Amino acid sequence: MSLIPYNRVKLARDSERPTGLDYIRHIFKGFMEFHGDRRFADDHAVVGGIARLDGSPVTVIAIEKGHTAKERAYRNFGAAHPEGYRKALRLMKQAEKFGRPIVCFIDTSGAYCGIGAEERGQGQAIAENLMEMSTLCVPVISILIGEGGSGGALGLAVSDRVWMLQNAVYSVISPEGCASILWKDASKAEIAAARLKLTAEDAKSLGVIERILSEENIGKKEFYERIRTLLIEEIGELSNDLDLVGKRYERFRRIGADVVNKE
Image (cartoon, rainbow, N blue to C red; front, side, top):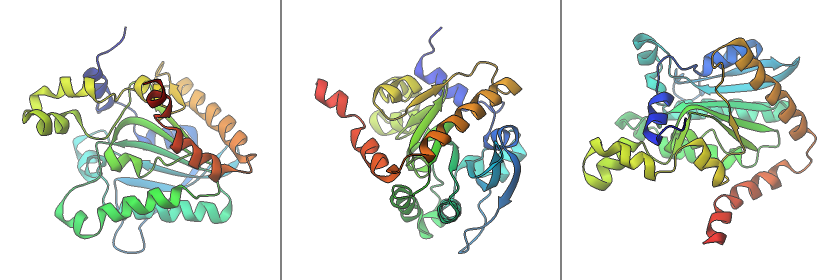
C-alpha cells in the first residue's frame, strides 16, 4: 500500500530505523574509524574511516543519528558541524590518493545551523565538499538511508550513483520548515511534504537518484547482504570506467532535464 509523503517522513525519522553505523557494521569488515578535521574538532555526527568490502579496501562515511536519546544527543541528532564535513572531505581526498572507492550513508534533517557552526564556516565547508566531490577520480556511491535534508545531505551526495531506501526522503527543506515559511504554520507539514516531491519515487522520476532500495526485511542479515551485493557490483562497474569525472558532471547536468523538456 502506498504511503502519503508525510508518513514516509515519519518512517525516515523512526529511532528504530538502522543508522549509518548499523550499515557499516553489517556490510563491511574491519572498519577503522578516523577522527577529526585537523582544524577544530571531531564531529560525532559524522563517522568515517577505512573498511573492507569483498576483501578490498574502501572509505566509508556516514552521518550518524544514533538510536537512544543518549546516543542522539551525542551525535547531535545527525546535524553535522562544519568540522564534520571537513573530516569527510579529508577522508575522501585520502581515498582518492590511495585509489579507494567511497561509500557514503546519509541520514540528516540538515546541517547544524547554530551560531558557532556558522562562525566556523558551515556554508563554506559544504560548498567545498560539493566542489571537491565533483572532481574525485575514484568511484563514489551515496545512499540515503533515512532523512536527506538540504545542503546537509547534499554535502555527501555529489556522487556517481545516488540510491535511496524505499521510505527515505530527500528534500531541500523539512516539511515543517517549508510550512513555516510558506504558511507561517508548521502544522501544515503534511501538505508541504506532498508538494516537496521528497519521496524516493519522486527523486527517481526527476533523475536525482538511480536506484530505490527495497526495505523488505530491513535490519536483518538478508537486507544488509542484498545491499552489500549491490555495492560490490556497482563499485566493480564504476572502477572500470575511465571517465568517472566527466560522467559525474553530465549526471548532475541532466537532473530534471527530462521534466523540463516534457513541459
